[in-house]
Length: 199
Image 1 (cartoon, rainbow, N blue to C red):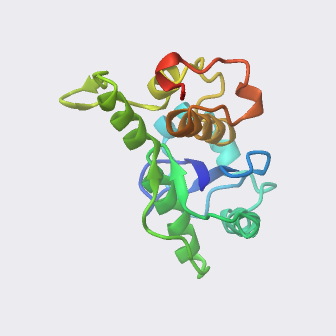
Image 2 (tube, rainbow, N blue to C red; image 1 turned 60 degrees about the vertical axis):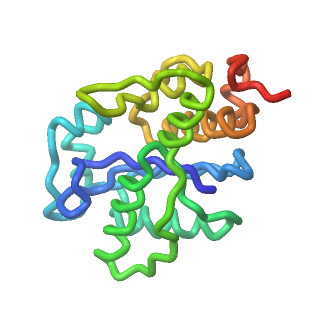
């Protein structure tokens, strides 16, 4: 699997742009990818999105940064060295749709499968199977990456909404939920909770 996170100028792939891509090869966790880019010309830039991911409007328009096309091409070149190219993430359809929209914008061949692995679904199912009531909000699931990380024995990510660090946290949570094992070396110091351990 390729565990992916993207940061963007908003939530709609039709109008907003990618600003950064972070990824980790789940089968070879030392194989990571990270890059930043400027927004494509004409992209909408939402102040609310920037407040979350801590990019500025100047960052989004920085002409010295590579274009979103160049970042996508670099990412796709990195992907060629990964065996299992299934996209995984926390709400990975968001990331997949932004990447696919960028590929279509520039006529770049999109070869990824439609199906993805969603950390949210894995964590939600794990909680139910272990008699834990998943958090809810406004009548639907309130489970997000910080709550999943806490369930997996990890501290709050000090760099939340950083594509690189969120990809690492997501991969670590997937490994702990599925295998009961640590994956990312930097997160080794945090013990795996008893409810995730395997015999």
